[in-house]
Length: 299
Ligand code: SF4
Image 1 (cartoon, rainbow, N blue to C red):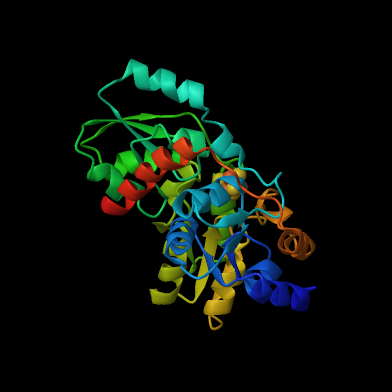
Image 2: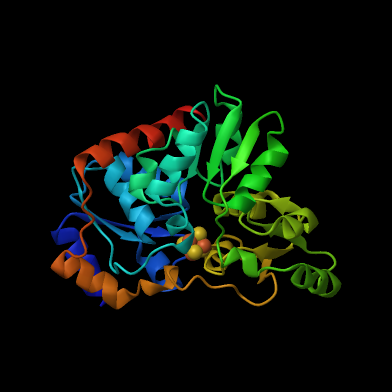
């Protein structure tokens, strides 16, 4: 199947993008593996591909479509959604905008396309604090992740930030108990966690990083052993890129079932039958693109 995928990819002039949380086999066959910001950038830079097969969750494939509307963007499993993104819906966001007309709406890239279309500026976990700092307004509505919002509040105390009440159920599985246990077993290890983790866990960590930030930190740090507080898919890349270092998940491995819905078989059928195509209304694409492009200007 892997051979067939590579053949189809060539024939159809397709490119495979995969998120850091994908299963190892998908990461290994992809043309590019990265976090949401890196993948969004890649999608807009690719000039010669006709098809983008996005191995990730739906909002990511939508983001690729928004940034490359002329390309056919495929998601191998339409059920690969993100519960965090679904926690901010269009009507509710419109309501809060009406309540605070002077506030800027900042949406984490983990939002659906219609919400991005009524957003002033998007951000990722790698740049959320920088984006908020550079906004020319004091009042901010930050959505949908309340833990990332807490992190941004610590970094940018001069802004008046209203946090949306969303959360990632995968990152909320990391607990203080996990941290205590792991510190006992590996007192010399560096604990790095994602800002979608609960504030108590973030406060006990040695560093808080996005997935791309974790990859960079692991390369640059003198530590030989790391405890990782994010979805377990990232450990594949961490180990591959740093064979002389050790990486362990914080507590038991935390798995996002949505990210794991993409399999080699589904990727094969996606390419072969050109399904499932991401189709978005033109006005949503146009408006959402402004909020994504503004993010790139603000960092
Ligand atoms: S790990 Fe969390 S934020 Fe990421 S796709 Fe899964 S549910 Fe959504």
